[in-house]
Length: 98
Image 1 (tube, rainbow, N blue to C red):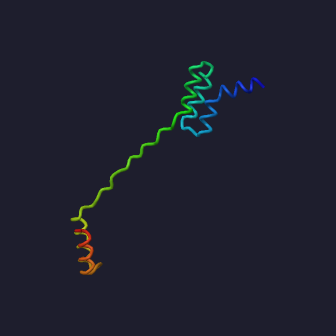
Image 2: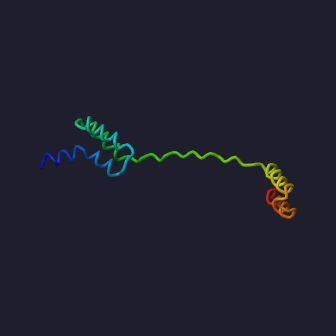
Image 3: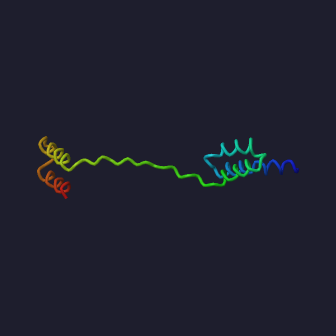
C-alpha cells in the first residue's frame, strides 16, 4: 500500500501533465522518470506540468489587394466582350471608385 502511494506521489507531475493535456507531457515524464528522485528534478517536473501552455503564434499573411485601376481594366474588358451592359459597367465602376 505504501509503495503504491510513493509511486503515485513520485509520478504526480507526470499524471498532472497528461491529465491537463500539456504539450510538453513527454518531457515532464522524462524529467520525472530520470531526475524525479532528486527533489530539484521532481520540483522542475512539477512546475513544468503546472505552467500554462504558450498560445501558438498565428501569422496572418496580408492579402494582396488589387488596385482599383486593375479592377476598372477588368471591368472594361468585360464590357468590350459584351459580358456586361453599359449600365452594369457604370454601376460597378461607381462601386469601385467609391
